[in-house]
Image (cartoon, rainbow, N blue to C red; front, side, top):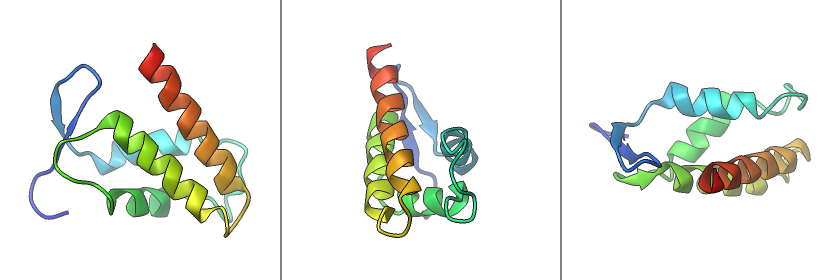
Length: 95
């Protein structure tokens, strides 16, 4: 990501992309998954590749879930992580 990139939060505010926040969110959803295969940092790096300026946090969650679903060919725990991200996103959208 070159230069500053902003995300649109659920409340409509813009905020600079914070890689650490995304990693932290994914890490909390990795509880109980095999750490030999599921590492939040490379998952976040892969998700960030699909970013564009003005992406919403809900779209980031969708992108993260889709990325993990695609990575499930490497290990089944990625499917679990994809489902957790999707459910968490749904709860936030409804909440």
